[in-house]
Length: 191
Image (cartoon, rainbow, N blue to C red; front, side, top):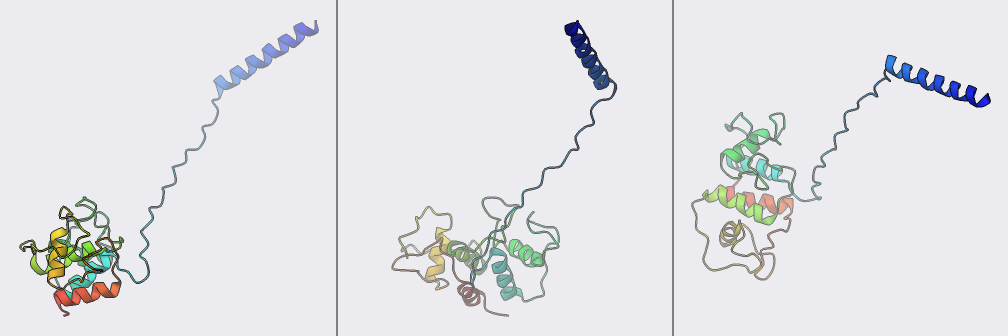
């Protein structure tokens, strides 16, 4: 008899739970949007210069503070609200950059300027794309296949940038902010 009562109670309890589940569905758990992962901006080492800072320096050297610039943003990472916007827009409008990392839609303004990029920007500012690189190699540490080889060759030939060692350009080295400013002044003068 105990067994029968226990079984009846178990069945009654199971039936009651079943009815309760059917009658009132369990409340849904609140949905929480995933927390966006912060995109870390590169840290500019002390005494170095970012791409955006270089763009500002170069545009100021060439035009001063008064110049026209396209109002429609070229780059998705440089909104019109960015205080460097007008300089970066002019920098792009002058064809001194095509973007970064193979993407024409981003500028990477917070990346540190390397020597190869400094050479490219300054030679483009001086000559555009209509220049020839010297045929005599000035350095041995950069293959001729490097995308910026001819700019580096021209920068050394013009004295815009000096070699960093005996027959070495050190393309990935990070020049100091002072070296960048001196090269800008040497190439573009100061307004």
